[in-house]
Length: 189
Image (tube, rainbow, N blue to C red):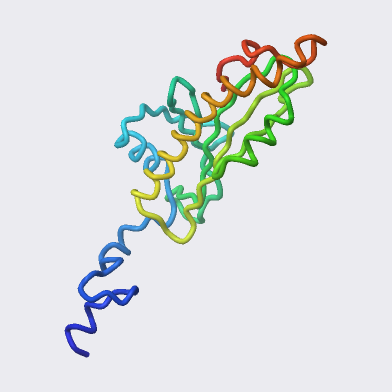
């Protein structure tokens, strides 16, 4: 085999490898809470590691909104590595959140979903959730990119709620149905 043949990458471009040979060893085949914590901190986030039901939960905030990262399916072995994680932010809801708004958000946004969750008969939460898959191996740059997507979505949600909620509840204000914009409380955990 000639030297030229060994330098042709997967796209057929001589001398420009898409993946360097040693980059494969730097892939994370699963993540630990420390991996996620380190990546968040490197991006400038403050992070607190908590334990809920025997699982590590990372708590941070963006745009003044607290959020959790919950690690998912665990790989066998003592390392505590996980194949997925979920970013979650909660807003307490007072009144009735318009279903049309949920559908509008989910129809027009990618990567995360917005839904209502009723914790108790008299308490409902607006939940923004984004799943991140790790299975097959990812780089720390991928984790950082997912965190940036999350940050952008949270900021979009806050701005969207400020504009969409008042217009959705104004028609209902005459009949007393639906929450007033100030009724969507701050984030809760």
